[in-house]
Length: 437
Ligand SMILES: *Cc1c(COP(=O)(O)O)cnc(C)c1O
Figure 1 (cartoon, protein in one colour):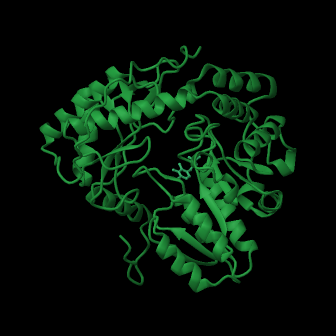
Figure 2: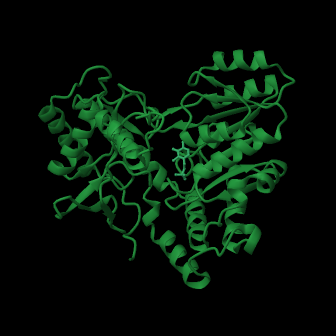
Figure 3: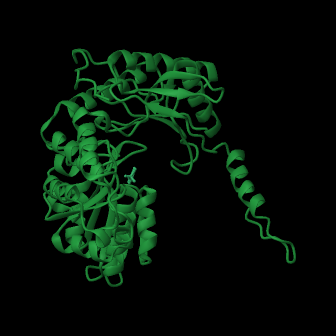
């Protein structure tokens, strides 16, 4: 697909694009999106429109709306109320048309959440990483970026966009990170970029020890808490809050699109860092601001999760229960320290087939995760239980997976754990009444 046409032959544009996509099909990693309609108030139920035109009610097991906050009645009300009173769109970039007041409130809420001077909101978490990392790197003279090997694509985009020198450190490997820091020396500007929860494996970075190294070698620290905000810590500020190290990290990045259930990304940091990003980042300056409805909805969700523990407690319970039941049933659940439940398939074609079978036969929707999202040979089903996945739904999932593994002859080896199912967890708590509308 990457071969150049011979001299004198004309470029065939359509064929080039078709060949590029055909290569993905050959590798069995062509992406197909299920046509779903979520039903507010019935989470995690959704309506699936199959290719044959039939509609079916199914259960979603792979949403990043980790706590169901996208359907919380207060969040829906905040969105509709702000939209009704202030309109649908933001009306422009913040430079052109000012800042909608809900954004001012949202940024204050986020700064408070993370115990920082200030916060800055972007249209997505992807944009916040790309814009903030590249801008910080550009502003620091001769900056060296030290980036964890498994960082998200949006962080890699930021690292590349900075255009400065970079070194990749082996995932969560402190010795390797220290080697690279030592080689760079204390004098040089250094930015360490990493995540708290790595969302494909569900493992967690040794944040405190990374902060110790940053102090020792005088480096700046940037953490992506996208898969932790709302879910960990007393007020839902993430793993840094849980581990008591929020003040040890210079820049904390998060999203309002996952556990907060809405949309938009942000960074929280010192006044000087936030003001520099605000003033220099093209990905902040030259794009229309988040609309008032989304800002108000995100703010409501964050405020709710600052005080309510019910969602977090139930989330952890249902995630642990899912892991325990699946392991006890002999399924190859990969080790995960968090709410993410990855089940290994180790083949892209089988992974897609398992996903299709689960949906068609059992009404269970779990998107296959293939390369390049995860390394080849570690293709998996990534399951994300929420507080709204009841014990009965977990039972159903377990039976559906066992049937799928048998029907397709999938391997149960490799990572098979011997976890016992714990008793005494009580019934799944009811979190909140059905959302209106
Ligand atoms: C999803 C994700 C992002 C991007 O957040 P969005 O708000 O969805 O754009 C950033 N970092 C990580 C680790 C993610 O998984």
